[in-house]
Structure formats: C-alpha cells, structure tokens
Image 1 (tube, rainbow, N blue to C red):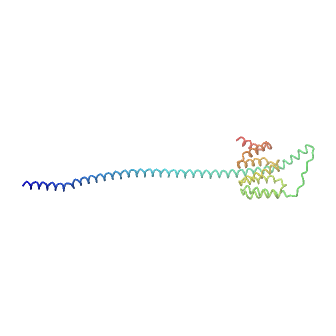
Image 2 (tube, helix red, strand yellow):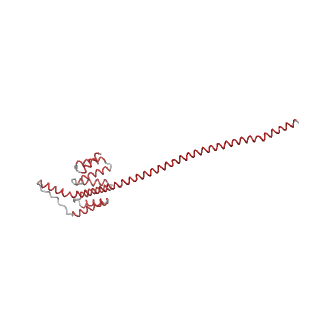
Image 3 (tube, rainbow, N blue to C red):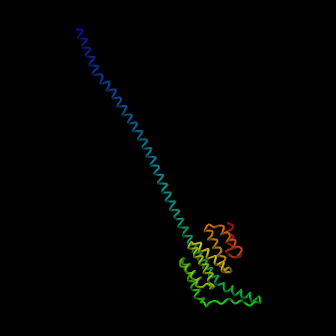
Length: 263
C-alpha cells in the first residue's frame, strides 16, 4: 500500500515538472518579447525624432537659401537698373559735350576773321606794312566749308567712324585750309569717342605742334591729358597739364587743368 502511495506521488511530481516547466519558460519568453517590443518602439521613436529634426533643419536651410537667392535677384535687378541709368547719363553727357564743342567751334570760327583783322590793325599801328601771306593754291572756301560742315554733322549725329574718316580726308585734301586745324582737332575727338586714346593723342598733339596759336590748341592739350589719364599714365597726364598751364595760362582749358591738378 505504501508503495502505491509513493508511486502516485512520484507520478504527480513528474507530471508537475513536465507541465509546469513550459509555463515557466513561456513566462520568461513572454517577458523577453515584451521587452524587445518596448526597446524597438523606443528606438523607432528616437529615430523619428532625429529624422524630424533633420527635416526641420533642412527645411529651414532651404527657406534661408531661397531668401538669399531672392535677395540676390533683387540686388542684381537694382544694379542692372543703376548700370542702365549710368549708361544713359553717360551717353547724354557725351552728346551734350559734342553739342557744346560743335557750338563752340562755330563761335570760334566766327571770331577767327576778327583776330586776323586785329593782327593787321596792330601791324598798321606799328608803322609796319602787313606781311602778305604766302600764295596758296587756288581753293574754294565755300566748298571747303561744306565739306567741313558735313564731317561735323556726322560727328554731331554720333556717326563717329564716318566722322573720323571725313575729318582725316579733309586734313589730307586741304592741308593749308583755315579749317584744317579744327578738322584735325575734331579728328582727335572722334578717335576719343571711339575709345581709341592712342590715335586721339596723336591727332591732338599734331594740333598743338603744327598750330600752337590756334584757339583749339589749349583744348587739344587738355584732351591729351584726359586720354593719358584713361590709359593710367598719371605721370604723363600731369606733365601735359603743367605744359598747358605754362603755354596757355589764361585759357579756359587751363582753368580745368588747375582743378585737375588739385585733386
């Protein structure tokens, strides 16, 4: 009888162990699975937060870049407007300068006969007979004037290449004309307007060397100095201005030269 009881208890213990172990292990596995899910959720949450932060940073960068691009476009538009305005003002100033010189040229041409008459009068007052000018080849002053005016009109119309060719042709065709010094002067101005300072300097220097007493000689020297400054030859420009003050101290060009030397 006792053996049967022991055997029964043994069976119960064995059954308990057999059916109880899976429960224990199952509880452990369930706890481990729950822990893994929470860790995964936490990691996913962290990744989501970091991703959102990166997206926010990227979005802010994109907005800032877009604002900078817009600001650059506005600045570019403003600068383009300023360039267009300055270009227009420069063209207008150049046109006014051309008109001024053309008007001045007309006034000086009217004064030239009076200057010649004054020289003859001074010779008469000195008791000396006026010196007859050397005889020149027969010319047509009216035709020369028309040719000169045609070249001047080309310059006035801003047809600079055609004007330069016309003035150069005039100086070669009429080397002894009273209009040749003026034509040579305007040839220099045409070259300057074409941004060819070297040719402009050569043309204006010829006015000063060949016709030093001509009314346009001081302005020719001033134009030479201007071209030298634009060629970044400040030393030569200063020497030219000093020569202008020494040779033509009372001229209008000398007043401008003094102002430039003060700067």
